[in-house]
Structures are given as structure tokens and as C-alpha cells.
Image (cartoon, rainbow, N blue to C red; front, side, top):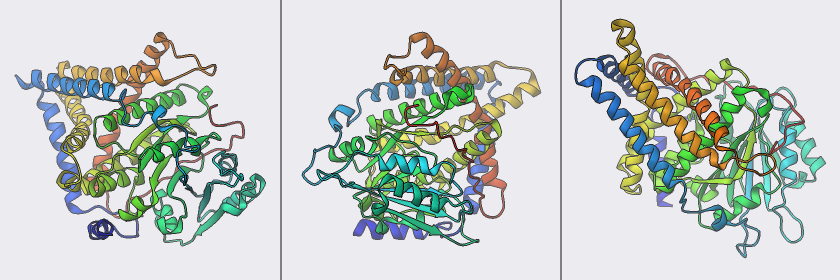
Length: 470
């Protein structure tokens, strides 16, 4: 009870912790501008004298050191898949789930996910579901709610399915805002699971996840996979980037750091979610926001479960990718400004987790340094620092991606060859360069944008052939 009251005092006292769309306090604007200007200044001056040798060497040294540490830690997670089991009888009182899907105009894709939930094999001995499904119909005009009801009826789970209609033309946009329609008190399951409307999951999804909670986890995130890899290199790069992201966060969890949720596949104990204040409409990235709150208030890490897989559609073009990554980058920075001080000061957070968080914040300044180095190259013609920074940034990304692809398997179960891993790792390294302009653009948005922060939803296309594991 004390933890919940503390959470309410902290989060409701924040200037943008209202039920409306997120806004930007003046202090955050100054901090964003300071990071951008400071990083660019370092990069611009890095070709001058001794600084020109120190900056690339220091940046590469820190990146390689952190990368090796993460790669080693990811091999020894606190809860391995074998230790978690599959939750099919690990406890006399099995864990129950409330599955939340926030959907706005998703009638084309939502029925597929509802059918997947209906096919879950996580049931009691009488065959009754050990889960419920809550669909938040967020002001849809395409019949999303009716599509969900019809799919639930076809799948035989209408008895455990609820559709919650969210109304209000002035209501704030965004997934976090939509989730406020299903706060913890509206859920009956022990664990709340959040899936995107375009997600696809296999029939054992909840059963395998239950094993992690039976093993003591309170916060788990699923491994995100990409559907439709035959659509081209862009989809393939996103798929392997997700694998790399999983490697990084699994390593951060393994070494006691501040591992984080990812929005598609959030799993959190209902009581823990309630104790930190539930869902917040002002969170631009609800996954990072929640990760920071449970760490600051409860010292609770996020478990990365590589065998609990959720499949999703890729972003199909570069314009959509820019909008998505811009929101992710801005959400990451806003999370740092709002929750960073609480994490560093929290007595619930161990020293190594605080150090991990500080290192995470530090790497967000690297794109600004690269921008400054690029400006210096244009002004002076000297390329050494810029090329060194790019080589270090892309090289470490490619190396970690190569290592993380050891998880990958072909359709027949065989491992990916070393040669294929090398090519795909290089592709991820090149693809990671996309973040170099995105992060500075996000910092500029925070510093200069006026009014509420807009939320731009990704469009999903119906594709009946897309199934989990495809």
C-alpha cells in the first residue's frame, strides 16, 4: 500500500502527468538542447589536436567494453528457458492472464490475433481458459469492436472477452492513452499482457510465459519477431534489429541492469502495475515509461524471454520507419528526463543498475557527436574523427548483431550459418545508421516543438496469410 501511495505522489505531481496529451516542460527543452549542442560541439572540435585522438578512442573503447559485457551476460540469464519450463503445472494455483489489445481502426488485422488468443492451450483440466481478453476499441470508425466480437465468438472465447469502447473527440491519442481504459482494477488476471493489434502468437504463448512467472518473475517482455520477411531487405533488417535489441536487453538483465519492456508483448503482474500507478496517457512510449517506473519504485527488472515470441508486421517504407523511430527516440529521451533522476536516487535500485542506466543515457549523445563531426568534416575537410566514429558505431552494432543471430533458426530448425550471420550482421550495422539523424531530430522536437506532442499511428494491412512463426 505504501508503494502505491508513493507512486501516486511521484507521478501525479509531474507537470505532464495529466490525463491529456503529453506536453514538454521548459527544463526538458533546455536539457534536450544542451545534449544536442554539447554533443555536436564535442564532435565539431574533435578533429582539433589531442581531442581528435581521445574522442574516437574513448567512444570505441566504451562501446566495445559495454558490448562484450552485454554479450557475455546474455548467455547467463537469471531465468533461463529451461528453468522457466512451460507453466503447465508448475503451481497448484496457476497464473492467470488478462490480455489487453488497444486497437484503433484495426478491423483488417485484429481478428487474426483474436483467433490466436482463442487457440491458446493454456487451460485448466476442464478445458476452461486461464485467461481473459480485453479489447480497447479506441474511437474506431471501421467496425473494429464488432470484428473483435465476431472473431471471439467464432473462436469460442466470447465468454471471456470484453470490448471496451473509448470515446471522446478530445481524448489524447496513443497506445498509452488507450490503455488507460483498462487500468489494473479492470483486469481479473494475475498478469496483464499487452499485445499490438497486428500481433500474432502461437498456441503455447501464454503457457510458456506462465513458466517465467512461476519461476518468480514479475515483469516479462516477449521476443518480438517480424512477419513477411519475403517482403524485402527492409523487413529483414527490422527483424534482425529486433534480435539485436533482444540480445542487448537480455544482457542488461543478465548483468543486473535496467532492462526494458518492448511495447508488443509487455507482461506485468497486475499488483505491480497497480502499485506504480497503472497506465499513463501522458507516456509517448508506454513501454519505456513503465520500465522506468517499476525500476525506480520497486527495483524490478524486466525479464527477457526469448522463447515467448510475438510476431508483428514490419514498417513497409522509409517514411513510416522515420515516423516510428522518431517517436521511439523522443519517447526514450522524455523517459530519461522524467524518470532518470528517480532511478538514480532510488534506494530500490542497485548500483550496477544505476550505472547501466547512466551508460544507456550516455549512448544517446553519440548521434549528436556524429552530427558535429560531420559538420566539422564539411567545414575543414578533415574526415578522421567522423570516419572513426562511424566505423566504431556501425562496427559494434554489426558485431553484436552477428553474435545475437546465434538465436536464429531456419524453418527446418537448422542454425543460421556463419556466413549468413556475417551478411545479416553487416546489414544490421548499416541499418543502425538510421538512428544517427533520428536521435538529433527527436532532441530538436523536444527542444523546439510547441503545444502537445502528436502521436502518429502506424498503419497495418490485412494479410490473412501471416501467422506466428511464418
